[in-house]
Amino acid sequence: MKESLYGELTVIGMKGTEAFVERVDAYLKEWRRHDDEDTYLAHVSCPRFGSGEGKSLIKESMRGQDVYIFCDIFNYGVTYKMHGMIVPMSPDDHYADLKRIIAAIGGKARRITVIMPMLYEGRQHKRTTRESLDCAMMLQELVNMGVSNIITFDAHDPRVANAIPLSGFDNVMPNYQMIKAMVKNVPDVIIDKDHVVMISPDEGAMGRCINYSNALAVDVGMFYKRRDYSTIVNGKNPILEHKYLGQDLNGKDVIIVDDMISSGGSLLDVATQLKKVYGAKRVFNFATFGLFTDGFAAFDEAYEEGIIDKIFTTNLAYRKPEILEKPWYVEVNMCKYVAHIIDTLNHDTTISSLLDPNTRIAKLLEKHRAEQA
Image 1: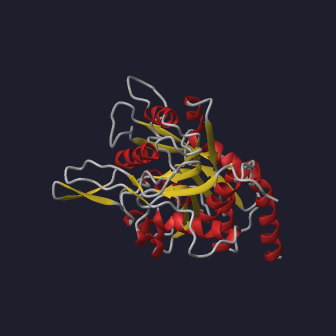
Image 2: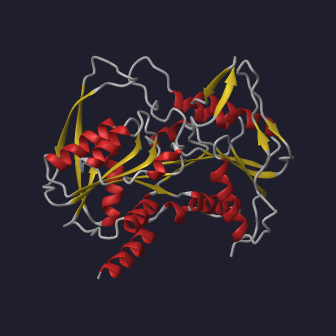
Image 3: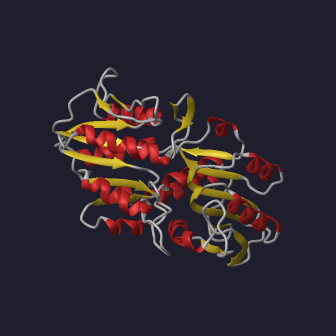
C-alpha cells in the first residue's frame, strides 16, 4: 500500500497537451478518490507578443510541490500570431516555453520532473562531423535549470543519457500497450514463430525488434539501408536501396518496428518489398511516434493497394485529428500508463515493474491464445 508522498502533486501540461493531461488527471483523481472539482493540474500560460517573443505565467504557488511537466515538443497543431501571420509552433518554440515554465517556478518546487515523450533534437544525438550535439545540450540545460528527472519514450538512441550521468533519465517503452492494441484490433493474429516475424527497417531499430521478439518468442528480420552519403536531402542522406536479411516470410504476418514515422517513405518502401517481393501475408507497423510530415496520401494509397494493413502509433505526440478516421490507423492510448508513472514516482516508489512489461505481455498472450482456442 502506497502511503507517503514525496511532495504535493502538481501536473503541468504544456501547450497542445491539454486533452492528454486532463485524462491523466482523471485517472489520478479516480485512484486517489478525489472529487471531480479537484484537480492536480496547475493553471499556467505562455502568451506571446506580436513580435513573437513570449513569457510564462503560473497562477499558483509551486513551493514544496512535486511537479511533473508534460511537453509535446513536436505539436505543430498549436499556433501563435507573429507580425500578423499565423505561425505553427516549432520544436524550438515548445522547448523555449518549457524553459520559461521552469524559470517561472523559480526553484521553489521540491522536485521537477519533465516528461518529454519524444526528445527534443533526439535525432541529433551524436557527432559524426563538425556539427552540434543538440539533444545532449538540451538535457544538460534542463538539469542545470533544476530538473531532477527526465522521462522519455522510445528514445531514438537512449545512450544520449550519458550526457547527464548523475541525473535521472528513464527511457520508457510502449511494448505492452502496442501488443495489447494489436490483439484487440487484429483478433485473428496468431502470435508465434510460425506465423509472425518482427522486422527492423534498419540496423538502428534492431534493439527494439529484439525486445519484441524476446517477449513474443518470434523470429527477427532486418533491412539494410544503402544511402547516398554524397548528398543531403531534407537534412539526411537519401536512401538508395533496402536489402532484406532474414528468413523466409512467405505467408507470414510481419510487424515492422521503429521509434517513429517521419515522412513514411522508408516504411512504405520496406512494406512494399515485404508484400511484393518476400510474400508476406499482412504487414503491420509499430511506431511510438507518428509524425506523418508529408501527410497521409501515400499511406491511403498503400492501404488501397494492400501494401499495409494496420499502423499503430501512440497518442504521445500530436497527429492531425483526421488520422483517427483512417481505416489503416490505430491509436495506442498511453494516458493511463503515464498516470501510473506519475502516481508511483509521487509516492517515491520504484517504477521498475512499470518499465519491464514482459510479465504483463506473457499474461496478455496467454489470454489471447485462450480466446482463440
